[in-house]
Amino acid sequence: MTSNMIAREPAIGRRTLLKVGSAGAAALLFAPIIARAASDMGGALSPDASIYPKKAFAQTSESAALKIMYGADATASDKIQLDAPDIAENGAVVPVTVSTDMPNVTSISLLALDNPYTMAASYKLTADAIPNIASRLKLAKTTKVVAIVEAGGKLYSTSKPVKVTLGGCG
Amino acid sequence: MANQILARATVSGGVTTVQALVKHPMDSGFVKDKAGKIIPPHYIEVIEFALNGKVVLTGFWGPAVSRNPYSKFMFKGGKSGDTISIAWVDNLGKKAGTEVKIA
Image 1 (cartoon, each protein chain N blue to C red):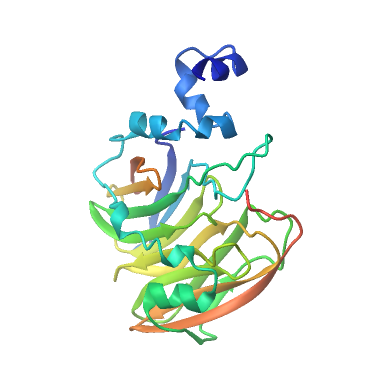
Image 2: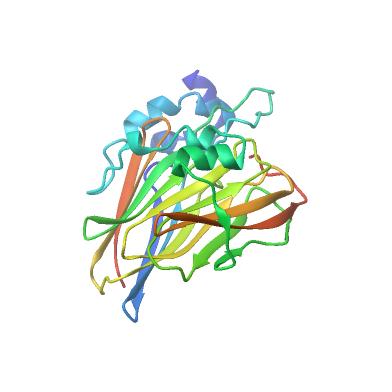
């Protein structure tokens, strides 16, 4: 199978490994091999995969995801600013920014209600982190984007509909 | 592919702004390739941002975060020359990280 890849990229040489990752779908089958080659390349930090809330990210409704993530439901708040485009031409890259003036924010989550899985991203903030986070999400179709802010142990939410003209499951 | 994080950190008025562009396919597991085969999920699960080795922000990402994710956040503290480290682990157990000095 390796020779297949080389056939697709004739002038490869020592950059083979680097190119495999972007060579497309077939190459992803080899991801575990690449993973081994690329491990131990980080700096001082080594994030622990076991802290990942896998179950929360596998839910298909807002309340189920929140229940697992926070053990509670959120109340609507006008103190959260959720910046997202009204219309996203490309659902694969939708810039979303969440910010709030609330004190003691410990967590911010982003949910896309009509995505295959509701939970899109979640951030844990330390006391020094300022609750103002920008990221880019994939939206499968036109959906309500929900921002969740956990402040002082309580959950607040705000939402915004984003019209997607080209789905971005990819 | 591996280990590519473009990062920039600037401080102004006691607030440090960190921007990071991580190179990662972030495959959701819902997309098919040209041959109609599902591209298996491959996405970053946990990403950490630290100031001088102390984590200030932890991100949990699902498959709905865009390919080659960009993130930006701010925190109080930090001064010019301090070290920001960024590191992630994905669902295949692959890890990568980088360090950048606050400008």
